[in-house]
Image (cartoon, rainbow, N blue to C red; front, side, top):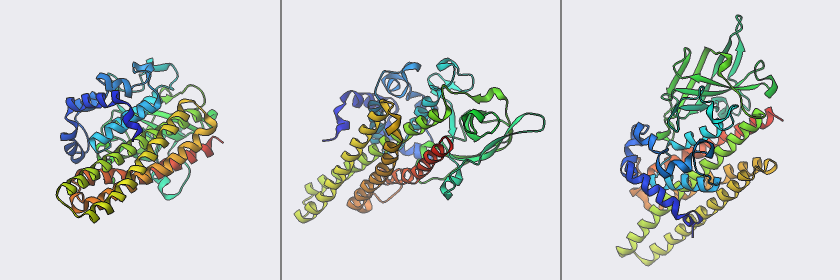
Length: 377
C-alpha cells in the first residue's frame, strides 16, 4: 500500500492536467527540446492544479505541505520526468517572504500567477568542496553596487526574464551576516547565460549564469520579512522537500514499469524460477518507495509545524536517504527490464537519468545548507 495513493482528489487534479496538455504523449518532446511550450508551463497555474502549486496569499488553496508534495510526486510519476513547476513553486516560497507582501511584485516578473524569474543560489565551487559563496557585490568608485561571480544549475536560466542572486555583500548585507539577495534582469549588461548539458533534468533547462561587473541599483536589493538567514533556510528546506517528493514520484514510476513488465512476462509463460527471482527485486523496490513516502510525509509535517529546532536535521536526513533510494529503485527496475529500458528514448531510461541527476545535484543542496548554517551561526 502506498500512502501517496490515499488522496484521490490529487489523482483527479493530475488527470485533468494530463487531459489539457497530453502529458504522457508530449514529455519526450519536452525532454528532447529542453523545455516546455509556454502554454503548457502556464497550465501549471491554471485550474485546480494551480491551487495546489500556488500559496494561499497568492490565491492558492490552503493545502498542507504534504498535500502539495503528493501533487508534485504524482505529476512526476505520470510524466516520468522532472517538470518545470519545481522551480516555480520554490520561487513562490521566496516571494512570500518579501517585505510588502504579495503585492510587491515590481522586482519579480510575473505572468498571471506564474513567476518568470530563476533563483541563482548554487555555485560551481560547491561541487569542489568549497563551502563558501564566491559571487559578491562590491562598491564601485562612483558608489554603485557591482555584481561579479558565477552561478550554476539555474533553472531556465537562459530564458527567464529575471534572476534572483544570492551574493556576499559586506555593504548592504551587513545586518544579515554579509549576504544579500538581488533581483537582476536577465538582459542586464554583463549577464551571460550558458546551457548546461546536465545528467537528466532536461525540462528544467539548467544553465550557468555569469555576472561580469553588473551594475545594480540599491532598489534591486530584495528585502525579506525577518532575518535573511531564516528566509534562506526555509527556502532550501522547501526545495529539499519538493525535490524529494519528485524523486519519490519518479521511483514510483520506475516501480510501475517493472511491475508491468513482470506481469507481461508471466502472461508470456516465463519460467516460474524467473518470475520468483524477479518478484524479490520488485518487493525491494516497493519497500523503497514506501520508505521514501514516509520520509517525505514526516519532513512535510515538521516543516508545516515550523519546528526550526528539528527542521535542519530532518531535511539533511531526507536529502541523504531519498535521492539515493530513488536511484537504487530505478537501477533495480533497469536490471529487471534489461535492454527494454536501456535507452534515452525509453521511459525508464529517462526516469533513471533524472534520478541520477537529482542524486548528484543534491550534494550541492546539502553543501548550500552547510554554507548557510556557517554564515549565520
